[in-house]
Amino acid sequence: MSLNTHHIIEIKEKGITKYIPKELAHCNPTEFKDIARLLFNWQSGSISYGDFRVQAIYVLLKLKKGKRKINELEIDIAFSNIERVSVLMDSFFQITDTLDKRIKLNITDNPVPFVKPVFLRIHGPKPRLTNTNFGQYEDASNSYHMYYRTHDTKYLYLLFATYYQDPRRYNNDQTESKATYFKKTIDFANVFSFFLFFEAFQNYVTSSKVMWEGNVIDLSILFSKVDESEKSELPGLGTKSLAFQIAESGVFGNLRELRSDKLWEVLLRLYDIRKRDLDNKAEQERNAKKNA
Image 1 (cartoon, rainbow, N blue to C red):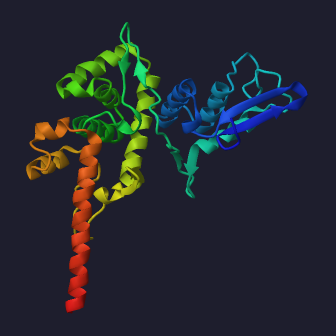
Image 2 (spheres, helix red, strand yellow; image 1 turned 60 degrees about the horizontal axis):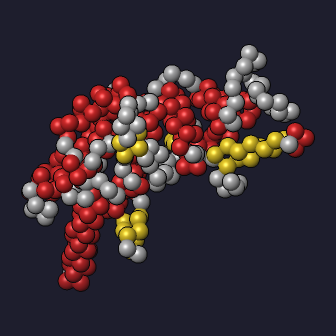
């Protein structure tokens, strides 16, 4: 562990050293799920931000609350004021000038690589969703946006169930029954942890430049307008309307074939098409200036 990834608390006279991750990306799987649960409680209004910070410190320092006051550490730390230490949790967020807090989601690895409901072992997607198909992303994007629109946790379970099944045999007709099954058999912390991972992926593909085969690919052009008069049809690449538009073009075959194609093959092909459109538009503008 280092100062780059963790806050370090040392009590030299007691020979105690404690490490607190600076953000979600530096949490181990157990810490990630525990913090995800607290983040959901805070976002849903069940606890205040101050309570989130204090409870998160207890989790990350592996402390147990005793009968003493909440502002005393359960272990014998000389300077210990839990509320003072809890301000370290601010590093998990980007805090704007208006004091809005956005969770830092520099996450690449799936924090829930598998779940074990009852006697099963069900694997989830790999980092960057590389082993998934476009149909899963289309359906997951819909659940993702519906959760933000309604704050109904059923969409979190639908999002989870979309990916925790074999992508080679993905069938969205079974997703709802799978979501119901997961709701009865797995810890909700797994579901919200995966939601945060998916949100990190959304942020990644809509605003980031990615490396692919040694080249920098700016996927953000898939979500930008060609000109100010153009109505954007790409607020979330997985929308059903976009899927129909792509299928109608015939580039990836019919709609069923498109949905079974690998996600990244679709994304990169779309990037190539959009880049050529932008290059052609720029060339036309240059020629128009020359001829003016």
